[in-house]
Length: 148
Length: 336
Image (tube, rainbow over all chains, first blue to last red):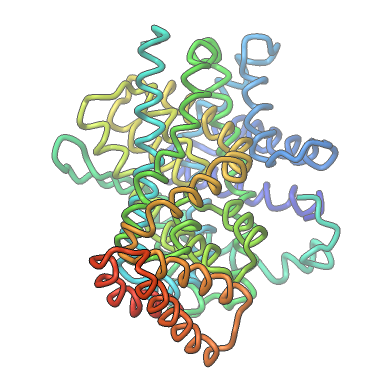
């Protein structure tokens, strides 16, 4: 995707987020605006870093690390970033993700139906196992290191 | 990641093709967020239906196989948009993690080590996949949570038509359809046991699938609002780690581990003799080269040959030989 396309698509996503925040949580457009701009700004910069970076990391990693850095105590604008982002409700950006994700798998519906119960059981087990495996280790290590 | 060939000739061309997708997304957002959250109490937890689920569902309905509002070309466009839409959400989570950076750093060892826990699913799901009669498909299906990168990896390593890739694709598709809803529900049910700390629940939500992580974090935050910040901070960090390490863990540990387990468990749990296993592997090798349907029939003959050979030489026990007969149709089934 061209950088121009990224910017355009991110703006569309930003609008979607604003609509979700307004309809779902009654947050006005002006209240959402700084948060939306921050989130979009981080995303766009992350895409830029991804394009020039020699490392083969997923763009999500750059996005997350950049956001983490901007909100951490060493960042001069951390207070502003945190306050602005707090105006965006947690699930508000997700409705757009769900819409796109649903549309993108809509051509797999027949294949899905054909998979049969065995594949559904295995998928459920794989998801459960991945979660529980991490959970048990996390719980044990957090206990040992005295973090909880 | 840094593709030279573009899907569209220009931004204008993209908009001309995809405008309906954007419009539909706004309609879905309006409807979904207007409905809002629905909470259904289940046991000690609750099954929370978030707007994202309504949107997902409406998206699936709108596609070429049901309501036909979108055609196949537009659907392909939509899949590229998911990553764009999830970026601002990841930024939002990253901000939470940055704001709680001291807590996150203090939990560093746990965060790193729990990534290994993702591999646990192999010990859990692969034996059951074998019991259910899967052959080499089980390797692709259970080596990881099977999101886009894993699917691409399997296709790269084994070829797009190999059984391993088919298994991966199956879990990918089923996971896409039911994963978001199930993951959130499962996380809240596990949390309801009260055995686990919210921090641990948060970090195990980051499994390398953004939308599933989102679902789990949303459910967990609703259940434990006092820890909502930390839960999302840990989920974001763990998700980032999974995103970075996931593919290497799969290449260097996950797939070899699956192969090893498959080799040792398939003869017993796969309910086949050693001869059956050899035949199954041979079948897998041949089918990887995508033989036409009619040639696959001859494979069964090869299998049968191998079976008799092994029985004759007396290298296998008789009870295994008995089960062997059952195994032939099972292997045959997999070819379809």
